[in-house]
Image 1 (cartoon, rainbow, N blue to C red):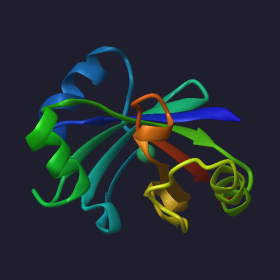
Image 2: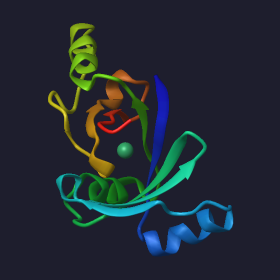
Image 3: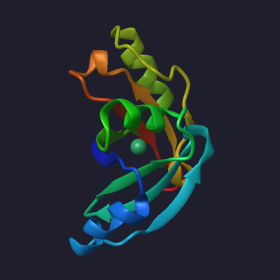
Image 4: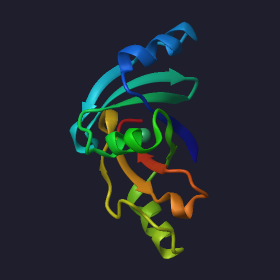
Length: 132
Ligand code: ZN
């Protein structure tokens, strides 16, 4: 397993990206993920990435997060080889999944979220890449 990316909820990618660009990072992709109701800015950092998440809808998952907690760390994502196998294994161990089936995430990957109740309070995303 590898740390794939860290997702940060922001009010505005335009405003938040300035800091990351000043840190020397640059955006590889800026894309909308309608299924998650977000716009995502992807900054590669070594083998992993920082993703800034801006909501497209106040009722979406990031919109609700921003309303409740404000800007900040939203989730961390671990890369797995086979997301369906990983979900099955976790469910078998009694881990609470938010997504019992994989969904589409940014850059064409498959994702599934594990409930913070099972992870020590952190929203954890599993992600499987198709093209690596
Ligand atoms: Zn993510």
